[in-house]
Length: 145
Figure 1 (cartoon, helix red, strand yellow):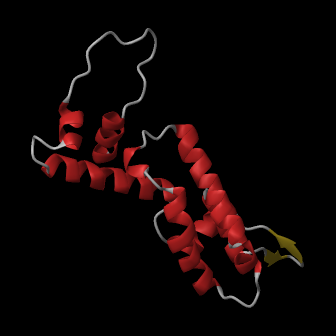
Figure 2: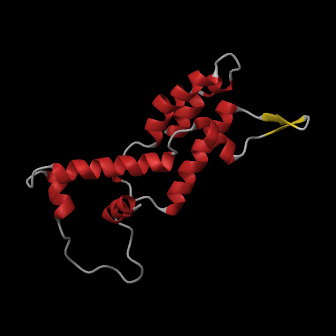
Figure 3: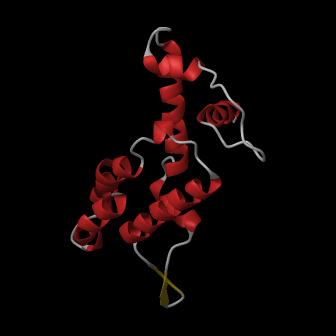
């Protein structure tokens, strides 16, 4: 869905008549919310973080465009893109929204459904091998960092 939102706005992002200070809010208000919908409940794997970062950089490269270097054109490096955007990257945005949701659930009454699910202990045996990453583990790691 985020790709669809991006390609729907691609003509605006390509346009030389729309300034960067207009394109950034377009990304921030129309594409990023679609890309991070439900991020509060994600257990982010490294591969998910990598894919989110790739899609964000792809959009930034379209917004900021190439740069002239030594008489030729080149694409901007990742560091140049982050310096130009100078806000939280998409992975940190997802982690902050997850911590915000965790704080909301902790403040709820004990009878609320989200609170009961958080405090419940599922029965049964876990499968062999490495334990799967849980949402709660991700929140604890975010708080520690």
